[in-house]
Length: 599
Image (cartoon, one colour):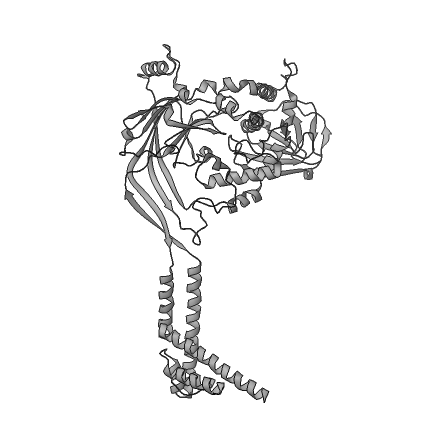
């Protein structure tokens, strides 16, 4: 049978209508479709036919425009947040406690002896000009000083500031304003210390100037103390980090120098020099059950030395809280031994503590709080549970396995957190750019900590990397929030403890229990009492849900089509049918054209 005749017959059987040309097919569609408008085009007079053709074209365009908006809204994957309140027995949070001072001064003093002598002599020269320390015996270790020196910047002439070395008679002057490039940066001191607003001054061209006057008056406070950081010792490529207060500069300088010294000390020695659990935790009570320092897990934290975690859940099941209220929480009495603090390293006294989830690493510098000595601190806890939707609704992660940053805190067998990711990212960049790792973060395998002897320019490299906006943005873009998180909201209240009427017998008992002493060996400056408890068992769950679903999309598309065109899904099938028929007619015409061409 001829192929063209077969296709024509098949087309008629499919159409159940006349015609096998494009015009006949279009007329047949308009006459038989259930969509409003096309029927009026073929049945009305010439004027109305034109009006209905325009209206049908207009409303069809509106339908496609609305469909584009709806599909774009669906593909944006927006979410809505909902808040629900529940009531249940909850796991007691993990409680990490540390001393604000990382090491006992009596233990670490031999390592920091020369450093302390240097800063004392420098402060004497700064605060008492003319009373120099030239005849100090034994001589000062100026080689240690010159690795990361403190300098004075004389800004009496702002166009030509002068750099004054504290332990040298030479001064460095800058001939013109363009040679001194000043950058302002806010430093969140990841080296472990106070946060400071610092200015970085880069010295490029140096000349020698006469010595500046040694005396300054309070009316002319034009001198600023700065930390000099050079890419190599003796190099001209240096950065001057100046501060609004000399106290901030001294603290920053001491942290950098002590970091270099302590980075060479083995971990077991640093643990030994810190505060031991049996000396720090004097009393413990959880609910009605007594506890002691053996119920705490010890970890070494670079910022705070030895830290101790209660209810971490690593070796045994996490504890549940039987009831809300102070009598069912955790009660601790701590001894921080403030008299053994390192004077230039720890300017704050107290205990640093943090509440967090089980099996998570405590980042006390970001999320911890202080408890003051000589007080009873009560902490009421409320729980917020966050549930985020994953891809494609948000860029969160369940366990960090899809994060491109190598998590250096996995050596602690802790769960993923964005704080761990950001610090791991910074340390990885530090190793890659500076050739060594910073003392405050875990080390990748096969890498050593930075120090002044092995890496003389590490402080310069670290300061540049820390103030780099590009580096921070790379880490922010690489790290992800966790999809599920638990946050502990704290209500804190304090009172003097013990009272004047009861301090004698309390200190006698605690002193005897600690070291079997009949004399009082404790005082108000070293004792802290903590009460940590759930305020109530109500917890809030903040969860995300999809703002648009496939059901919403289909119903919205159908609603727009029905409103503007009076159509339905069957009308779309009819439209699909005419497209198939058009293709069929095209095939018939192509066969006829090929046959004619062949003849």
